[in-house]
Amino acid sequence: MTSVKDVARLAGVSLMTVSRALNNPEKLSPETYQRVRSAIDELQFVPSLSARRIRGDNLQTRTIGVFALDTATTPFAVELLLSIEQTAQQAGWNVFILNLLSNPPTDQNVDLMLSHRPDGLIFSAMGLR
Image: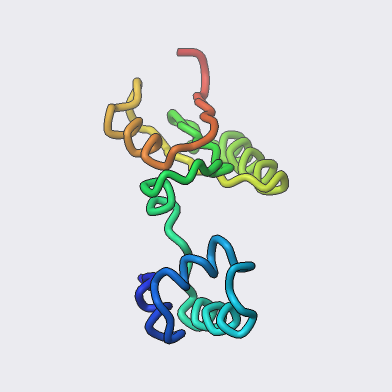
C-alpha cells in the first residue's frame, strides 16, 4: 500500500507539502501541486480515511452498513440487497453488507461493522423472528 512518504519521495517534496496538496492545494504553487498530483496518480495513492479520523477530521463517510441475517440465501433476498446497494450508490453512498449466520449478531460482527463508522445501519432479516 502506498504511503504519503512514497508520494513525497517521488515528487521530491516534504510530507507537509503532500498534506497541503491533499487538503489545501491553493497554498501551493501550481508547479508543486502538479508534481504531487503526478506522484499520487503514478503511485495510485488513496488517502487513508482511518488516518484522517485519527487526526480529528470530522468526516461523513457516506456509508451505510447492512446486517443481513440469513438474508443472502434466496433469490428474492439477494435482489433486495442488490437494490439497497444500487440505490445507495446512485445517491453517492457506499454500502457494507455483512452476512450474519448467527442470531443475534455476535459482538465481533457488530464491532467489525462499527469499525467502519457507518453513517447509518440497516438490519435485514428473512421471515419473522
